[in-house]
Amino acid sequence: MKHLLAAVALSFAAPAVSANECVGNNLIDELPAADQQMIRAATDAQPYHEGLLWRATKGPAQITMVGTFHFDLPEHQSMVDRLAPVIAEADTLLVELGPAEEKELQSALQSDPSLTIDTTGPTLPERLSADDWAQVSEVMQERGIPAVMVSRMRPWYLSMMMSISPCMMAEIAKGGGNNGLDWQLMEEAEDTGVPIRALEPWDTVFSMFGDMTPQEELDMIVYSLSAARHADDYAATLTDAYLAEDVWQIWEFGRIDAYRNSGLPRAEVDRLTAEAQVLMMDARNESWIAPLTEAANDAAAKGKGVVAAFGALHLPGEKGVPHLLEMDGWTLERLTK
Image (cartoon, rainbow, N blue to C red; front, side, top):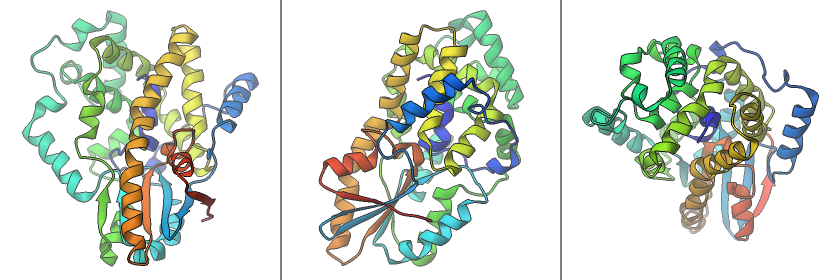
């Protein structure tokens, strides 16, 4: 689970704020040359690691896929302009979390605080070491959340909150920031009357972390600390990787950062990285193939295609959505903005 949860901005729907307001350094550029080369080699080995916009075809069925960034960037406008006519002619826009699911999620969170707060079990100061708790308290204080509130947060929720940089958290607190690319594309669909369909249930995030053992929950927090301490820089690094249409390097950077700063053996870092990838991306990607295929086939019967928009980290890799579709007989074509 680890601090790679900071990559939530590319892999799972997150609060929509303006990443353009945040200033930081590119952490990959600051690494020694050998580490940069390791990241480059591991990234280049992933199929579909370059590109944000793809077309998949299988007979008359067609899916236009875009990898999104869940925070706002001024550069999103060119992608919105590129996809607006495609969405207008599509049968459906498929997203991770649609408007209806978002309402269900918000309603559940408001009516059942226990989804994110543990009011009965031991507190996090009791579960973590004194040093780890001190670091958690410090990074959350930087995000405007006092330790007394943090002490009862569920570990998965805390880790996600830690992955949001202080400057982005400040924007959330102000209720500010424009929408990320997902939301902008949904607005286009709503404006043109194109139906929006979710790729997964609204409660996926809860089931995704629900089977973790108590020790895995603590591992997730501790692994999140390194990225949380330089979250503004991490946000800048994420943004640069996304705009370069080369997003997998942020995942490999997380591994290198853990080698250098977590204090854990490399084998343990690799194990936790692999578990995080399965949990956050691979399993979800595999579950999306059926609804994508079904929607595309239904659209093809009407002489139309579909558009699918989801976090950009779901594109690269053997278990990335494009490669899974290719293995199922689809033909993939990279598109330009």
